[in-house]
Image (cartoon, rainbow, N blue to C red):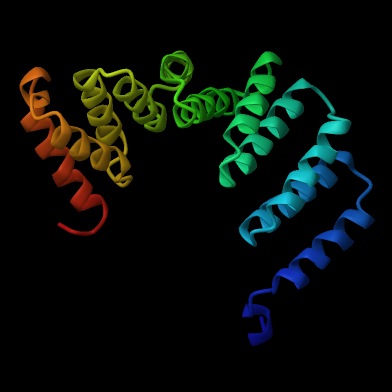
Length: 216
């Protein structure tokens, strides 16, 4: 391998390379996978409108409901990036009506819809989708965190604290749940007395987070 092969491609070079691959591709599945690679490239470069247009092109002729659900998830994620939460909500809801796709896609459609509804202040509606995501995959932490935000928005700080602790226990490397928890307790100092084993669990989460992030 030459030194030149280690030089990262510019956006223009990478985009041109993908365009040429797509133009030569005769297999639908490969062409769609390459198109999604272009979506990621555009998104990372901040070309959000172009990325969304590419996904909408895929949505015009989806191969099957599972693919359509995945594309709608992609579209909702792109809309989230620019805080177009109402559009993201509509994309996720449309994806869920298909009742299709692998478990990971269905988890993210529910979880991301819960997050989006929280952003829109629709906390009670968000709760149901976060719970559904947890039912699909209870080992993933993000839906627990978003459920905590839903409870917090509904004025249920103790319930929110329990969810933030659960999220932190599941994924020590992600600091967001602990940050939410610290802010929650600052606003509601009564919470530690209302959550079983709060101090021990919080201390355990902090030590695991420090270890996971190399701060031990």
